[in-house]
Length: 97
Image (cartoon, rainbow, N blue to C red; front, side, top):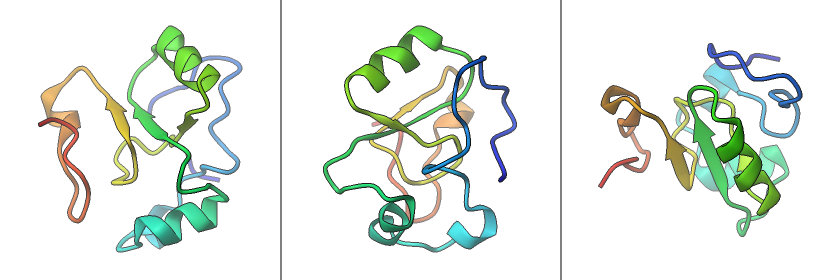
């Protein structure tokens, strides 16, 4: 399965329920995307670009699920350090308000 370009630290799962759908995810609704990933509407999703193990661990311990595709429009929280990484994809939510 495809994963993001940034390397995940050892022990981080980048495949599985939240695997990147690639071109198949283009134009997909969030409801359909969640259903294909086996996620409930109540589950929180985060995207992260870079290695922030403490933040990742804290979110996962609180029940958040990681979307390894940091360019995905499907997230409740997007963690990034560069403004250019916080853009809102077409049909997606803005990462910065």
